[in-house]
Amino acid sequence: MLDIKLIREDPDQIKARLVNRYDGSAELIDEVLACDEIRRKNETEKQALQSQRKKTSKEIGMLRANGEDSSAIEAEVKKIGEQIKAIDEEGSKAADRQTELLLTIPNLPHEKCPVGKDEESNPVIRAWGDKPSIEAPADHLKIAEDHGLISFDDAARIAGSGFAVYRGKGARLQRALIQFLLDLQTREHGYEEVNVPHIVRRECMYGTGQLPKFEDDMYGTDGNEFFLAPTAEVPVTNLYRDTILAEDELPIKLTAHTPCFRREAGSAGRDNRGIIRMHQFDKVELVQLVHPDQSFDLLEKLTGHAEAALQKLGLHYQVIELCTGDLGFSSCKTYDIEVWAPGQGKYLEVSSCSCFTDYQARRMKLRFKDADGKNQFCHTLNGSGTALPRLFVALVEQHQQPDGSVNIPEALQPYYGSDKL
Image (cartoon, rainbow, N blue to C red):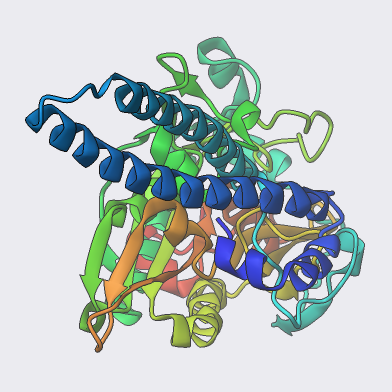
C-alpha cells in the first residue's frame, strides 16, 4: 500500500510514476486525495464540535445546580451529537473508500526501472553459461515418456487437466531437486528453513498484495475467507504480520518449500504443454525482511542466491529486468531469471526476484523499532529459489544425451543417488 503522506505531498510525481505502469492506476490518485480531504476536514470539524459539546454540557450542569431551565441548551447538545454522528458517517465512508482505492493501486516502479508497456521492453541484464549444442533436442514430454517420469493420465483421473503425477525416477528427481535447493540456501546463504501451512487467511492475501486484484486466480475455501497458498511468499512473509521487530534482528532470511495453487484464469493456450504451466506445482521460496537502507543492495544478493542453484546444476540462463508495464502488482523492482529449454526452443522463467519496498509491510503492519525508538516499516524481498516444474524441464532437456539418457549434474547426484536417469 502506498503511503498516503507521499501522495498528499507530491501527487503529480506519484501519478507520473504510476502512468508508466500502463494500467490506469494513476487516474485513481485524484479520488484518493478527494477522500483524504473529506476525511481530514471531517476530523477537524468533529474535534471542534466535540469541544463545543463539552463546553455546553458544563453549562447544563451549572444551570441545573442553580435550579434553572436547561432544556434549550440540552436541545443544542443533542443537535451537536447528531452533527457529530453525521460527520462520523461521512468520514467513515470516505476513509473506507480511500482504503479500498489504496488497496487497488500498485507499488511505484523504481525511478531507474526501464520504461515499457510489456515484456518486449524487458532488457537482458546478464547471461550465464552457453546454450548446449544438441541436435534435434527432445522436449521434456518425450523424455518423461521414455523414462516413465510423469503421468498426465493419472493426474487427469484424480484432478483434471493442469496437474501431473511424478512417478518412479521422476518423483525421485523432484524430491532430489527440492532437497538440493533447500540445502543450498540454508547451508551456503544463511536462510532459515520454515515449514508453513498451505492454507492462509484472507487478510494474509491482502498483506502480500494478491488481493483484491487477483482473487479470480486463487483457490478459495469457506466463502474465500481462506485460500490455498498461491506461493510460499504469502505464508512466509505473513509470519511477521502485526509485528514490531528490533532493528538488530534485520535482515531476516527465510526459505520454504511448498506446493503452490493457481487457477491460472485467462491463461488458456499459454505454455500449456506438459508441466510448464500448472494449477499445482512445487516451489522453494526465498523471503527477506530488511532495513529500508539496504533493500536494493540485498535484492542483488538475493537474485544471486537464486542464480547459484542454476549454476551448480550447470544450466544456461539469462537475467532480465522487468520494465514498468510488466512489473508485478506489489513490486518496485524485479529481476526474472529465465532458464534455457532446448526442447521448447525458448527461455522459461524459473524465478522472479523482487523488492517491494514498504508496500507489503504497510499492508501487514510489519515494522521495526529504529535506534531513536521510532517505529518504521520494513522492506520486503522475495524470489523463487526456484520453481520446480520449469527447473525440471530445463534440467532434463539441457542434460539429455544422444543415446536418450539424461545426465544428473554432479551437485545433484548425492540427492538423486545416480549420475543418470
